View 1: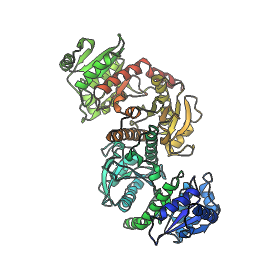
View 2: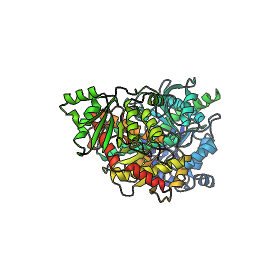
View 3: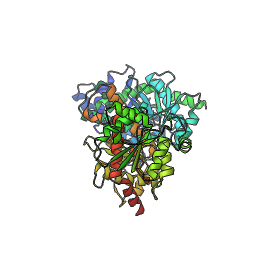
View 4: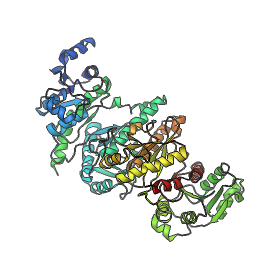
Amino acid sequence: MRIGLDVFGGDFAPLASVKGAILAFSSLAADDKLVLIGDAEQIKKICKDEGFDAGNFEIVHTTECIGMGEHPAKAYASKPNSSISLGVHMLKKHEIDGFASAGSTGAMMVGAMHTINSVPGVIRPAIMASIPRISGNPVVLLDVGINPDTRPDILYQYGLLGSIYGECIFNYKNPKVGLLNIGEEEEKGNLAAKAAYQAMNGTKEYNFIGNVEATEMFDEKADVIVADGFVGNVMLKQAEAFYTLVRRRKITDEFFERFNFEHFGGTPVLGINQPLIIGHGRSNEIPIKNMILHTRDVVKTKICEKIKEAFSKD
Amino acid sequence: MRIGLDVFGGDFAPLASVKGAILAFSSLAADDKLVLIGDAEQIKKICKDEGFDAGNFEIVHTTECIGMGEHPAKAYASKPNSSISLGVHMLKKHEIDGFASAGSTGAMMVGAMHTINSVPGVIRPAIMASIPRISGNPVVLLDVGINPDTRPDILYQYGLLGSIYGECIFNYKNPKVGLLNIGEEEEKGNLAAKAAYQAMNGTKEYNFIGNVEATEMFDEKADVIVADGFVGNVMLKQAEAFYTLVRRRKITDEFFERFNFEHFGGTPVLGINQPLIIGHGRSNEIPIKNMILHTRDVVKTKICEKIKEAFSKD
């Protein structure tokens, strides 16, 4: 397996990227190859400083990168040698099996939607977050931000995308899919949630268990929670805010520590043809390492193939 | 001032209602009167058991009540002698100055919308929650559940309703009103949020400070956060879920204890003509006491009059 990493991605690049790659290296199999896309001189220098043999990596040299302030679509198109454009196109040409970046989310999304493209049948791809639960098994929340206005048929599909992700990454058998709502009864909610409930109820494509309220999000009720991108994003950010409060109150607790975003390895864009993983901009070497290993898992478990298969049945 | 209390309201009624009224009694002024609407025999019995003189209360006797499982509109109309119907109509006739119940939220809302009625100019009334902040001053979040599908002009009005509430109850001078969104920039969000931003931006009616993300909800950025009823309800319930986690992890912390719903004294229906306060169904005597004192504050600070005045300027 060949995993591409955008060395320019993230606030602490390139140092955090290369250090994260070094950390990930020891967890990879002998035939896994990390392909670092960035400035070869910088990469070799950091490896040397870290006492690590840069020959363990394959390096694709470029000095061009897309800044966080740039217009994503314009920068992606006008900078074909930027690390993100290069990585996405290498993925497209199957020169790598997965590509990860903690850089411009907008540019990564442009690459996802216009170079890699949606799986036929998927109306709108989604991004997800793993939310810790007391049991130890996280709940898969999606969408957490791509689509702030979401139609019921899109919510319906999120159930299938989340279900496949839960099976592949967390090994959940027939994961329980819940629809985020403001009441348990099917007549509750906004117009989109009410219509989505009707679409999901009785589906044979996944295990729909009904509405889930935010009070139940950390329970065992659902393994996958479907929400529109506005609400999902708010929930993820509120969880971050609560973790910050826990830290500010100087509470040390093993469970709450799992809300530290450093443990998240980014999110694949679910519903596109190939594994493209978006990391957190604030990533230091630990989340970069986790993002690389997450990319490995997404490739290994063939999520994209399983999504294609599921949607070709429709 | 005369405050009406539904003695049948809540899961632990009538015991919790009467005990809560006894607790509230000592905090009320000499000329404040608590009017208990419920079974006179039961009320007197509980007072006697508690060693409290029932003569301190005024009792409006009824044995009829609206159950939590009943259809709110049908029950409200067909049971004119139920404690909720009686209380709302006493309020309407100015026989009491405020009415509070931890009973059927649906029936209370029917009373609010069809007997007390909206203030002219208010498109849709809202309910709120006080969310604790590190600083000690809570943030006012609204709407937390009446209107799950909310138009931009309604979101605009929530800013004014929340601002008046913040001024009256928390004594905030020119409270900072933020629009809940998934990004700081004005072009972020779903269709309703984007249009609401444009309506709120530059308003002279209140102090709009722009978009607020959920990561910032516990900060000092905004004193009032405006959200649609779906998202607001999810945020409130997620805060409850997090408090439950804190308890389950056996963490004792003075700040997190403020997330205990027992400290909340219910919510007035903001934007109707008179003070009608809805409490939490699970209320024991402490939240009942707080709901009574909150009703007192809502009456005393003349929130309804201030809302009428603000909307008559339009």
